[in-house]
Image (cartoon, rainbow, N blue to C red; front, side, top):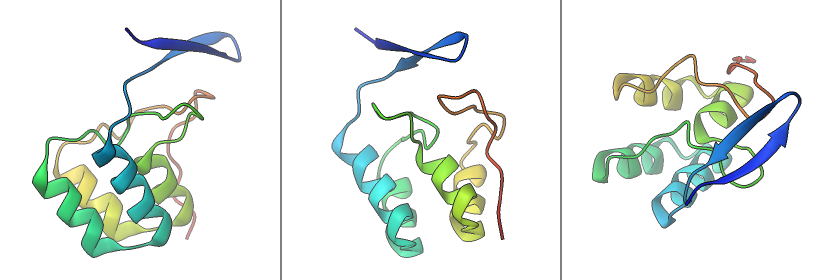
Length: 94
């Protein structure tokens, strides 16, 4: 079952957050490009998946300007038009 939470005028489904999702988010948070690559290569993982706080690895990498991580995620087919819990697209700040 998916949890739903309200954000602005829409509802966003929060999918089950697993250990690999957390490893990816933590690696992005630390800027550990090598670990991001390792996590992405081990499993089929969706970097745009939102955790219960509405964060995604993809949006975090974009907000921190970690272009190497973004390139790896996009090379695996990550949806560049994915929105966060507030309905915002990822924006790169470098």
